[in-house]
Amino acid sequence: MKPSIDSASPTPRSSSSLSVSRVKLPELKLTPFNGNPLDWPSFWEEFSSAVHNVPELPESSKLSYLRSALKDETAIEIASPSTGYTATYGFVVDKLKKQYERKPFIHRKHMQSLASLDTFSSSTYKGLLDMRIEFDKHIAGLKRLEQLDIEHLLASLIINQFEPKLLDRWQIYSSEHSKELIFTNVLEFMDITGQNHYRSTYSTCLYGRYSDLKNIAIG
Image (cartoon, rainbow, N blue to C red; front, side, top):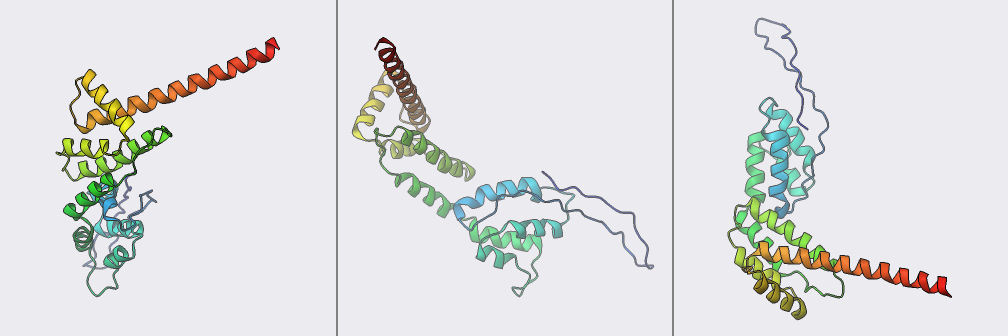
């Protein structure tokens, strides 16, 4: 949702009177920024679309929206007008980017998070899909940094989290379907394996219930 702006007719008060713009600031549902550098790219992407890239919106209004979205103490201090400098919108944006838009740091954190995920156990196949969601989050962050040219490395990070039994299944799957060790193929394998297990488990449960009902009826 983008802010709407109404312009009022000039109201002359003296020979030097200027046209006065009356700006309405509707409430925007912006995802708050909590100070985690990993969240900065997605926050700025959303804020830019809703506020920053709206040419009709005055910078004073953009600054108001920005301040309202900041929940981190350091970020709030940077945007505060009481910090001893003229906190113009452009100045605040530059300071925030300098503080939080640290691409090498963010890239390293995403990679560390991928590498530190717990080993997946086939005893809970829901964990396979949960792990897929976690990987998607960090992959999206790497895409925003335009540093997703490491498909083989990401694939290696993923399969390193597989227990031996699941790793064997991947080897069979990749051989039978001529799948290279790239992260998109590994994620496809995770989807197929997790979903097939759920379907199998669900069918087994239904068959068990049917057998129980049949035995009751016969008895």
